[in-house]
Image 1: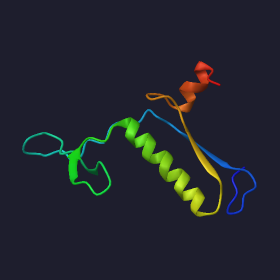
Image 2 (image 1 turned 90 degrees about the vertical axis):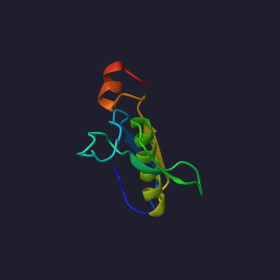
Image 3 (image 1 turned 90 degrees about the horizontal axis):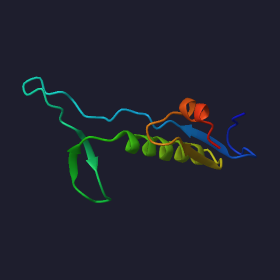
Image 4 (image 1 turned 60 degrees about the vertical axis):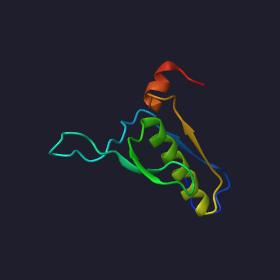
Length: 95
């Protein structure tokens, strides 16, 4: 059961890790993808590159935890192995 602010138990988010990379907008003239705008380090320049599926899973986990903590809850994110979702993991019998 998920509850709002002041929950007595931590909230755990299950993050799938079988996401496709984000490759950016397709340029109709060249047929190439432009990549996404990314700042790779704090204060660094903006670069355009693909965002990998693993990076997307990490970002989702960080946003999940940040959002729940903002409501006053203790929160954690648990990610399946890269390339899997939790349905795959359950079928494999993970702990």
